[in-house]
Image 1 (spheres, rainbow, N blue to C red):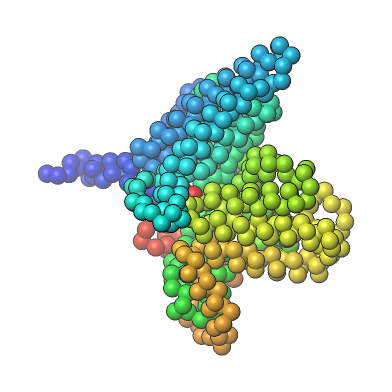
Image 2 (image 1 turned 45 degrees about the vertical axis):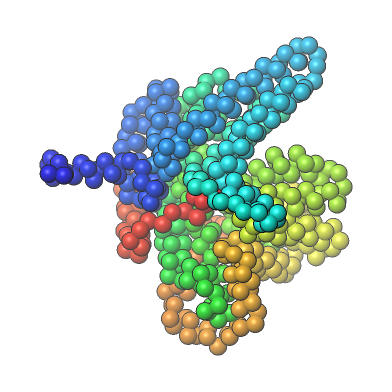
Length: 515
């Protein structure tokens, strides 16, 4: 017999589920993860008072989680972890010696050590993610030939390399003390909730929590349940449904659809990518809370923004703040004049676009946002009274009309940029824009609503949830927190049941897995 059965259990099938399958990476919204997490949680609570064993157990599970996502390439985690741990210790040793001798803390030796870390981390990222891109680009420019290499892109490599880089840079700047335990650092870099798709958790936020006694309050548990339910619903119900049944069709062949249908496709994708990515972040934050750890929020209703600057304070906050602190400010930020500030913004966003993927489409997307940020700064300096207030430090009361107009303009320029982000080629992107401008056909609106009424309902419902007043969202979260454990469990079961009823035959990976 090919299959051994004991108590009617197909152990070959079980083994298949436990080993890496490139067509089925480990996902939060998969049944396999839910069962594994249940077993993991029981063991985790058993080890709650044994810090070292608990950290070792979670680290090993995190490596296994990454193995289930990227196979043998889990060794990259070890390379980044060991190298940056040792380099950080070496930098601190050099700085201490220089301080004792009265020299500058960061002399040539510590700078070379920082450069070594950048070479290792960015070298790995560059090889796996950009070798074919730059090879093809060089061949196109020079007129030569380039044979595409068969290079596997490990899931989440952009996230854990940036997370480790933040640690090494903070140690170099003297704002963070290096860890004395490599286990603690391995735990920080590999912690599975945010490992493969963020948020990018800063060392100074996370490291102080590592050795603290595990304390999961009723509020933390309820908030975790709220975030997991909300994230699962956004990803597996709203995002996946409108993607499979409408958005993918329009973006694959925009010329076959009217301009109105293309515009609905763009609106649908704007909602899809938000629900997909914020859904993952919410689940990561929720799972971390259930384990006793707090992550900073990663999305804050970005489409409520009344300016592009505000949008980047609300969208993918962990990445935008990382780019600001470690790239934009390092280049001089706004300290070297207005023109240099605009150049720094453009360079930061161009590199931010390239971080998202090895394609000129992503570079153009980042460039558009860089230009828009510069225009926003110029407009604010020239016409301060006509500019929406978007900083918590500004005391001027915002003009509601200007904020409303700014919100509409901001949403649509963000949607325009999403066209280049989503389309596989510039020809497809321009074809979509051309259809919207030259072939709008508003008369098909009623026909579209009749044919895609479920899609329309999901899009409307998704945006209503997004634009929900903050006080209503807070009230809903408090309701979940106050629920008895039985009702919280029932709520999770109901959401999972809804997901099962409307999901496709395959569990769709998160969009940001490719980044």
